[in-house]
Length: 138
Image 1 (cartoon, rainbow, N blue to C red):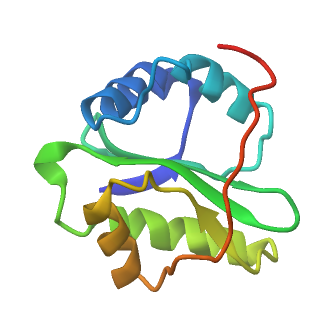
Image 2 (image 1 turned 120 degrees about the vertical axis):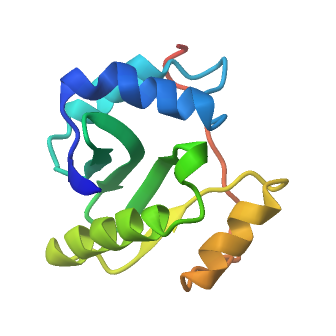
Image 3 (image 1 turned 90 degrees about the horizontal axis):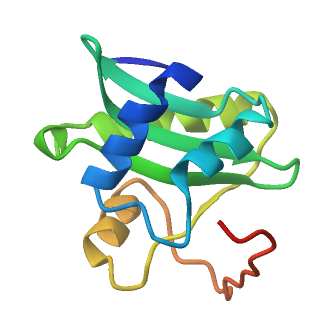
């Protein structure tokens, strides 16, 4: 698998991957999320490609204070093979290179398997309340 930066031409494959992995929700338009991310031009939106097929993706970001990881997905047939770990390690390295001291992510409270996966990579639960406010309806 080759890890590379996302290109706009990858959109359909990435959205299909997110959908297959259950990451899309009716209140978030994934194409709008992609277009918003492309405005940042921070090189932290990564895909894992095998042949001509995208089998993994992660949308990272850095706001100058904290890094963020969103939309991590690995094709169901390729899960539990180390691909997610490789993608996360690549993102972490890129964040460290720009001076990012801490990486945050959010996991739905009922997704216990994913919480356990991140714990094996050294992530822990922060004593915070995650709050959000929709500014633009999708």
